Length: 491
Image (cartoon, rainbow, N blue to C red; front, side, top):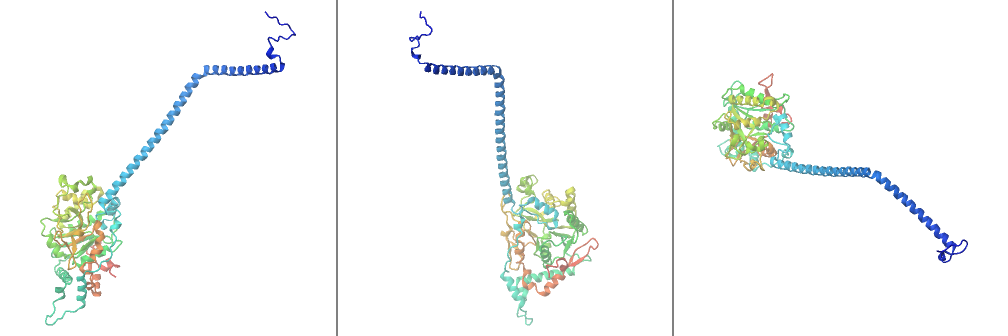
């Protein structure tokens, strides 16, 4: 046992710490280390106590918060994805709609504004062309003036020369020049008609030519139509002139009332007012009509309006199940813009149209209703497949309807009128409905009566003074001069 004597150095024990400064430095470090460890231990102890009592709740809260955060994030991602999908779906639908509309435009061509066109047909039936809209503007642009054909120039030169009256050395001008002969035939027809009328101004041949117009329209096409009727020898009756336009009911009621007041065996020729051109004499047209074995004949056209817009155009594609009957020519479908019939049957048919229209009578689509009658074999309605009476100029160039373009068939003749080389016929009235409107003025410019030889000052005065029947409520037999109806057209 070792005994430590106070006051004495025990070198064998403190041999490495004999220097007091060194010892003091180490003691301070030891104390500092102990203090730090004590603080760390205390902190650790407090953390252990804290987590022991609070970690379950904190973990649960954290877990719930994480779930909520993940759920919100997933919900946001889902909504974003759904929104993207919906936007993509709508874009696809829009593309499909655009494609569908583009195809419809291609198919219908001049009917590019179908709804607008229908509104115009309803509100402006007196200006009805039985077509579209579309977008119809590109089809109504007037084509550049076309130079008169050589034979018309010959007529002009012939008119300037005089026929020698002595020795019969020269043939009459009408024998030498077809257009002059055409005018002579018309004059003879008019003279014959004036000699053979009853007390009401009706022709002995019992043909009554009727149209409906409350006014002359925005351009001169109505006046051009009236002039063509005068030039071709028709006694045109204009129903509704000066009345306030309210709807299609006026046109149907006026036509029915007029037909009802005629003898049943008289014939009524009814045409649109703004897009027609009379090109044959009334005698020739009546002669062709009487060859049909039925009372009512409607114009036949290329387009199937408005049935092409119903049920996918089912009635236009097949004659089965009440569809359109087949036709021996491309002109298969009914057009109500020009028709002729016995007055008694016509009156009954127009009454049935008004009854079928029901509540929609004011803005009814008469072409649809009459076409339905035709497909149902009512009133003995037949179509002029071979254009003996009427030529509709509307064309169909793309599916679903077959290609049909009257401009391929209808050609000008040497005597200044028109002939359908496909059907081998000379129609009495041309109807520039639908897309055919674009050809109206150009084709009229080639007619025989447009030659200078038929527009001398004296002839123009006769044209201005021509008397036209325009019944009113107070005067059923009212007569108006052509220049009263079209003052700006015949200056």
